[in-house]
Length: 126
Image 1 (tube, rainbow, N blue to C red):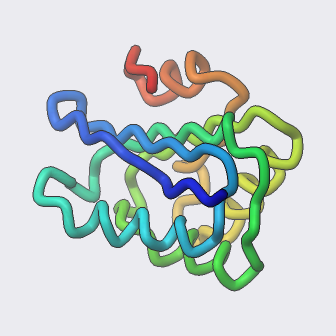
Image 2 (cartoon, rainbow, N blue to C red):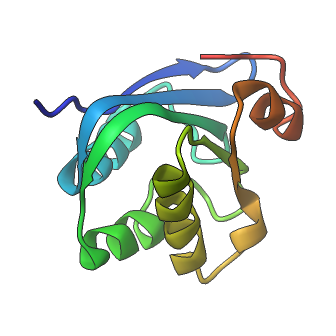
């Protein structure tokens, strides 16, 4: 069963918390970005804390990974921390980050929410 990405915007902390569960279909990444871009509370300069620890299966092709990395709603300067629970998830997140031609140091992959939160300079967790 596919579970879309869900998000919460914390404007006070200038942070978007995104979370995915179960099966993550590539199109869900693009839908997530479109929904964020259309949300009046969203600012492209906000940081993102993406929680992918509960994704059990990925159905995504290379073209979708490239599109998600390059056509995202966030500015190139926005810090984006991705939290991955498995080696496969970490590898996929690193591939997406590598597709970012501009400012790849702004996307980092972590194993825990705490590490990601420290890097984003926030104590928020999903």
